Amino acid sequence: VVDTPHEGHPFEPFTVGSLIEGRVIDQRSVGDGKKTLELCIKPSVLLLPPGQIGPPRKTLDTLTKGDKLVAFVTQVKSTELWLTVSPSVKGRVSQLDVSPDGSVLQNLRENFHMG
Image 1 (cartoon, rainbow, N blue to C red):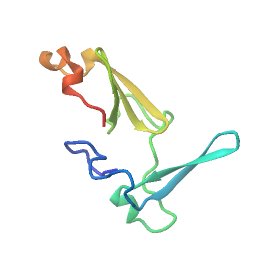
Image 2: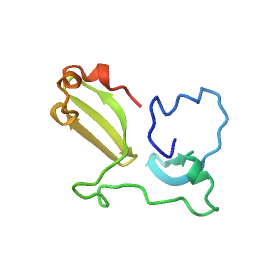
Image 3: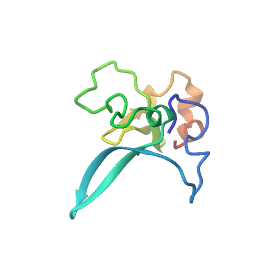
Image 4: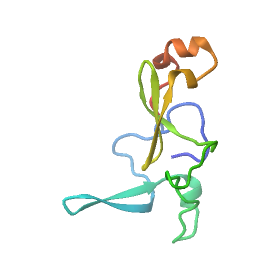
């Protein structure tokens, strides 16, 4: 939704019923002959010439140990966070790997929010 991470929820400016412009970046079969479109509304992607969709999406095949990623929090549990990097890449962060600050570790739900 945004080109660079920032404070706050990335979907905050949008409401149900909003009309927004997007670009198709992928198409997937989801079973029963149905297909779903993966869309992008990042300003940098919308400015690209037709036919270009920007840098390739991260997949398990393109990631290597030590890569830094931008992800969003999809679930907060008492002992772990679940993150989404791209539609095909999701990951779990153990409580002890979240922060060196003990006060953060004591209550993940208070310190991390979905989005």
